[in-house]
Each structure stands twice: as structure tokens, then as C-alpha cells.
Image (cartoon, rainbow, N blue to C red; front, side, top):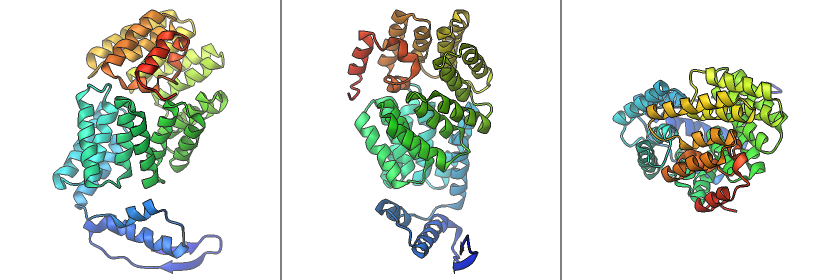
Length: 373
């Protein structure tokens, strides 16, 4: 390793490291500690703890884990199946590999749709196993925090784990993004913008983090800057249905109905479209006066529910809300509440609930979910 002062090209330090491949994680920490010492950078107690608690790992398990992490960001069933397969391969090689347990939990958590979904119990089992093996694993705390947020509606526990994830790994874009999602759910929007901005700074080539920052800007009412972030997400990932659907929401707020409808249609065309994206498109159609398209989406959602692994009642409620049919919307929201669907965690914030907010039934639902004031 060599350390060179960039502006002057002056050589500052060099050192050789020769270790077994099983010690790759310890080697990474050793190099980081050496460089931090040479440049006298301030290391937080949490960072120092992480740098001295690494352990040996089977090289084949480590490689399988890295492949699993790569595929875990996929939106497709095939990509997620590959991620699960690689994480399981890693655990076959090294059963007590905490990071692989955390990766498996992450995939299952993002596949679930309600607290009653068997995948969520698998996610909980895997993430608790990861933390039992290594309580300093930031990614495991981030996943558990999101589970507590999305499915358990345990708002205080969610914040504890998400804050811990950021403390343990302040250079993790995923940890900052997840913490930002929590702040959005709580309508703490300036804090949400701070965390999602940091996530995008750490990983500017991920559409996911452009979408996160754009969402915080949108909820703060800065629709033009939200449009810029979501357009940047499309530059990074041209086939992102989320980006198209979110653009439609911003255009809707600006009264640009033709552009909103066009964005909704683009979201529907993408092969990776999810029930969430489809429902957002249906909501946009309803608010833009395209009743026929909104009703078509309702039928597609019902057909989708027969193929999906769990209920999508809250998504049906979004489209009814867009159509102005409040009684139907609340009927489906109640079904979503009984199933503890993940989408209800964003009840205080997301646009499809806007037409319902002045109804006493909406405030009653917030109270039943024990949202903090």
C-alpha cells in the first residue's frame, strides 16, 4: 500500500501486507487502521470497534456473499432468487457467517408484503441470527430497523436500529437511505433530506438513492428539484418503474396532467413493474381524470393479487382514493390494516392517501397504528 499527497505528488508512506486469503476481512481492517493512523484521521469509537472485530472467513463463502449482495438489489424474482442462492452457498461454506445471514434477511424483507407473510418470519430469523453472531454489523441493524418499521409498526425500535446502523457504518449508503425512509414515515422531512442526501453522495450511481433524495424533496414541496433527482435516477437506470411513477406524482402536483399520465404509462411499460408502481399509475390516472385507465389498473391489481405471495389491499385503496371513492378506499385500507401490510407504514406521508386525510376514519387509523404525534 502506498499513500501519496495528491496536490504535490509527494510520497508519504508505504507498507507491504502479506496474509492468507482467509484473513481478507482482517487485512482490510488492518490497512484501514494503518492509513487512518498515518493521516491522523479521527476515527469514531464505533468505527474503531468495527476495525478490530473482524474475523477470518472462508474465501469461497466471501465470494458467494459478494455475489449475493450484487443480486440482492435486483427487483426481479430471478435476481432475488439468485441472491438467496448465493447467500445460502456462503452459509453452507461458513454457517456462522453473520454478513451472509444479514444478506439473506435483507432479500426476504424486501420480498414480503405483510407481517403475516412467511418470508418476513424468515427475514426476522436470519437477521436475529446475524446480530447474535455479530452485534456490530451495521447492515443487520439496518434490515432489522426496516422490519420493525414496515411490518411491526414499532416506531421506536425502528429508530434505535437504524440509528445504530448509521453509527456503526457511517459510510454505508444503504444505512443512511434506510434511516431517511424512517424519517419520511415520521414526517421528519428535514432529517429525511439530510440522510437521503448523504446516501446519494456515498453512491451517486444508484438509482435507489436518487429516488430517496427526490422523495424527501417531493414531500418538502420542492417539486422541481424532486423532478431533477428522479430524472437523474432514470439516467442511471432507464428502466426503473419507480422513477417513471414518481415523476408522474411530481407532474401531478404541478398540474401538468398530460406529463403525469405519460409518466404513468411509461411506468406500466417497464418489465419490472411492481404492484406498487402499478397502483401509483392507477392513482395518477384517477387524479388526472383518466377514469377508464384507473379502472383498468384496478382489474390488473386484482389479477396480480392472485399471482403475488400476499395481499395488496393498500394498493387497491390507492387507486380508489385517486378516483375519489373514499368508502371503497377505506374498505380496502381496513383489510390492509388487518393484514399489517408494509405500505401502511407510510400512511402519514405518501400522496395516494392525500384525498383521505381530512376524513375522521383516516385519523382513527393513525391512532390505531400508534403513530407518534
